[in-house]
Length: 571
Image (cartoon, rainbow, N blue to C red; front, side):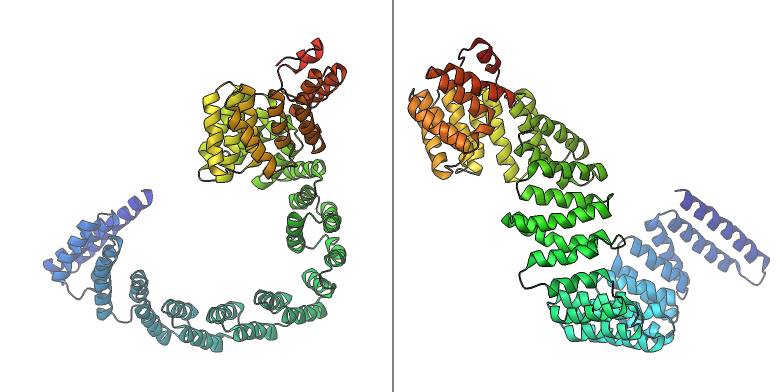
């Protein structure tokens, strides 16, 4: 607004000065003075942004002064502002007829042609400008641009060639020609252009790298290796070339040997960490897919070097954390992720990996705390809310869990995976709060997303059996869960608990024993249930032992302490 006001004041001052000058010159008629005043009035309205009024005033002015190219051009600009592009073109073309050599009019018209998709006509304008002003490089680039838009690639290449003949080889010209040849699918000529740049500046290693990268992109690794060999002749310690050659010289499929060959380069502090990371990321992904611990250990040797050489780079610690997590060294992974977040807390995927690690370790207090921090940093990430709700469910804070899980559902949108996980936890939380209707609805919605999810079937069966509700359905779900995933402690536990409810203690013990073998001894809920079973078989001391294990493991059971203190079963 301030700028427009200044323009207006300046314009009006010019008007006053101009009118005074006209009056001072007796040879200018009254009619001509009025005409100039009309021009200035129209210009004032344009400056004020009153384009409709300005257009009307300029239209009236042009009727009186048809050959005033400035007025015609100004009217074209106004119609361009009003998005009446065809009218704008009409007046720009008319202004050019009056003053054919005006560069400004031509450039403005070309831009308006572009808006209308008239790229050939825009190219014609710049062809004329290049002919009239052969030393202006900008005009060559604009001509080539419009020719490319008009799909006249060969002609665009010809323009670049003419410019190169005038100004010599430059990186920008070579890159543009290279890109056009790539677009045409002519890889041979695309490579030749980069080679010409190398020939012109043979000591510039960056240009050699352009060529090697291009060969890598088109799958010509053999040609890329030839270029890397040439690079090493110029710069024997060039890290990217050293690593590329190490990759090529390692025996086929011998990834371990390849990784070992990278160690000297990884130890160089002046080599960019991103360059190093690029070499190991594909192999980290392979570890994620296969769990190959031998490969993981070799990667960890390199990430350890990165941690020492680049101690302030979060990427090194994050990479170590990923490799450890993918090979079930979860507690070690946690430490790496925590260090990563100390250095850089802006990457959500690191927070997420740390949260899932805490969940796997059943460190629910840490999970609750970390997920709350993550929500503060990333309030739109549904998985942070889900993991916070999961932590509170495990800790027995069911009302808090329900609130945050309902938020997670809202944020999850169409993310079916998160929806499924959230609904399963809601089913459990509502069950513990005694809201059986909401619990069943959550479980049923989750089953709609994944009807054969074994641990969900098991949890739903457990909730129904604990209530003594629809036991036939509960039994069917527990049996299906075991059939689908027989080695899960949760599915084993659900099957055992149905037998327990039927007073078939022998069968219940058989299935609880299976649950313990399948890592159920790490689950306080299963340990407490095993204590209940032992109590029923009069093994009181053993029952107390298992209840105590459950308590020490962080059980959220409200009756557990009372059971231990009173040496009595409460259900």
